[in-house]
Image (cartoon, rainbow, N blue to C red; front, top):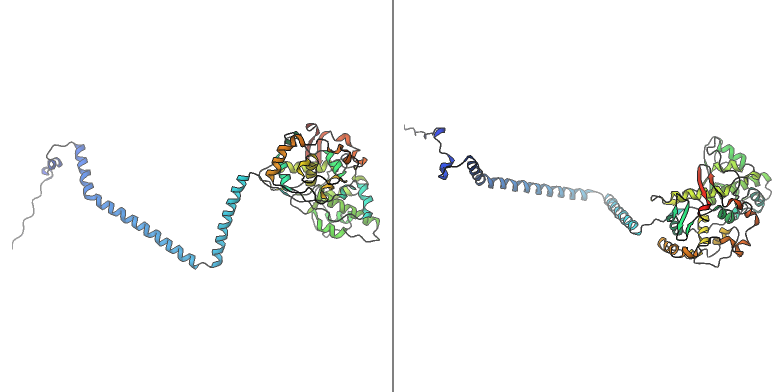
Length: 416
């Protein structure tokens, strides 16, 4: 049996160098380059093939995931799909609203005036007059022009408590509060204890009724409760019942018209102890308290995130219309007292405009059309009672004005 001879193996030392393949002597760097070229020729196609294979696998994986999602969508109930569509619509709507706000660059504020809704019983008027709320009790609420109020807020400067107009600085003053509402502006600060320990007992003693039992704790009275309990008085009502009804009516005026909360339909019970003796109610500076609350709300709403406004908005709007009559499209309204009631008579101030239009009107006409002393007109002065001028020396004072925890600075010398 013949066994084939193995091929001779050359020793390492005798292996042909790479340079011999090229027929020339090469440096070590040149030899490395040659190895690289040979490797690319042999293994290059294989590497590119594996890359293509990986890419193909990734694409197939994507397709499988898409098919899986489609199947899941088909399995989902119709209600769930509708919810998702609604969410998408909301997102789009919010995006559009944000874009609109950026383009328009203004915000329309909202407020609330909770008018009493009924005239006081004739038997209550002597008690309301005694308390200094006789004129304020006759106030009739009217439609507020929130675009106009928003345009005014843009001109308000918290550091000076004034509106900056082309005619100069101007603001709502104690004179406006006294003559528009007939409220007392001289006396003690409207302040006291805001946290009442036994609110039910206080209500029983001063109102004759309470929205809760003796053990319940509450800090506010609903206007609906006040109206339901004190609107209709019996023909043979005692003096004590009339006094209680007068207190309830004043509470409604304070919380609903003079110092309303921006988003509430209640009045804080903190004002009730001040009405214990109706003869001493007049000794408080209610006019300055109303002005302090209005100043605070004007300062608060200058912040960009503010959307609602409290304070006496009917005073603010009436002030603007008396000082800048060009803002009202109706100028033949008769003058009545309280002066704020002029705008409650049909057709009110007439047509309403948007914030940009009110801006333009104020910019163009405030320079020449602003009336610095509107109450000096003979037709207005003739209807204002002499009692409204009793504390006129305080109109030009510089002092802090207070309403419980609200303290603002009154600077009359900045505007005249």
